[in-house]
Image (cartoon, rainbow, N blue to C red; front, top):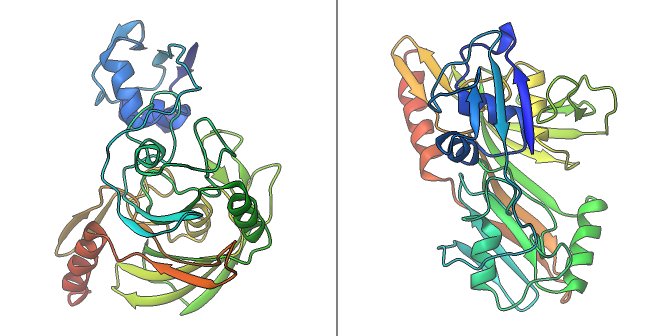
Length: 312
């Protein structure tokens, strides 16, 4: 399968691997493998993943056909928060893809769970057994996975009826005006880039995000976020739409570094963490709440922002 892209003036100076990852459904690491294999070419020639694309460049990527019916169990360490015979709750690290896809066949959460768990709900098999929701690759935090069909369908229904409470922590750009707020903007697939979502799309679905300020740093704000709907990239799209994009988000807002009078802070991924999940156990009926601590990279960014905020 081959795809051809022409670089526009707005896209110039983007890294080749970033450009192709944004244009396709393939992760950046998957694109890098294709480039190194000579399957991604610029104007008919091979360039390095870090090549800065130029306006008018014609870039072609060839994706070899891969089998999509096998989930390979892999012995990958997992942070298990809670587990019984019906479901498992994990703290997913940033950088880990949830399930296999073209260009990213191994090292995913599902590969790790296939090794760890004796059984998972066959709903979603072969590559997504037990998956009832997901997190982006570079979003860390809590996920629940079903081990049997009763649990799977019950959790799906709880998500659909908005009975499950999901809370996130996010570091966003700038100083939010209000201590609390709600962003109610419908979201749909972007017309210009099918990998992006947008509040200005032609066909949209309701999306509601509520937030509360936890701490202000002048250059940035730490917020506690609750989403009432589960749209793709919802938090990232909503905060970008009000001018306060999630720091480190290279797709929306592109605030991957923060320049201050006292120095520069770089972010290696979007500063977004699923910190808690409250649900009713599908079998026992007991209300349960699970939490995941702040990851080290986000805490390090917060500590640096606290230090710089004294100069703001």
